[in-house]
Length: 167
Image 1 (cartoon, rainbow, N blue to C red):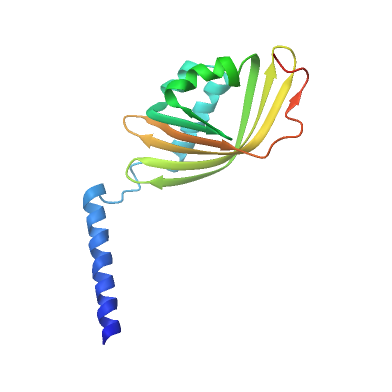
Image 2 (cartoon, helix red, strand yellow; image 1 turned 60 degrees about the vertical axis):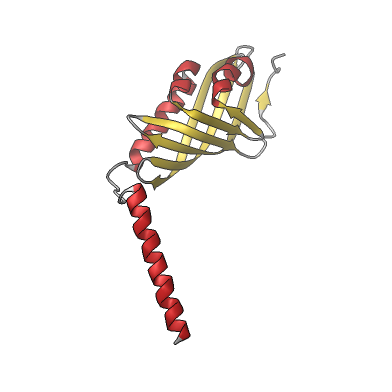
């Protein structure tokens, strides 16, 4: 008898939690956002990287944006500045390949996306840097998509850089 009472209480509490969650966040509606929308947005974002258009990149970030790059955490307000002065200094051409997208929709207006990436930066002095790894994006969709957080990581490459490094 005691076990039945506990089971009934557990069911009642769970039901109330589900009901409350629905009233706070609205009902689950898979039509608000689609996985392909998030994938297309990330591909557009990567096109700005390939164009070396750092201002366009920054326009796609949310006000509380953060970029976690291996062991660095770069806040949104520092991001556009770090690209031409550090991360992408001396880069003449850049390309990024994407694969293995996995999209988790977090209703009503977020998506968490992971993907595999391989990129190559060609420097003005002829040097080439290559990396590969994984990225995860936390996206928010309001009037349009924006990026809340990016995490970029991967194994250290033994042939990361070919040529003479820039000073």
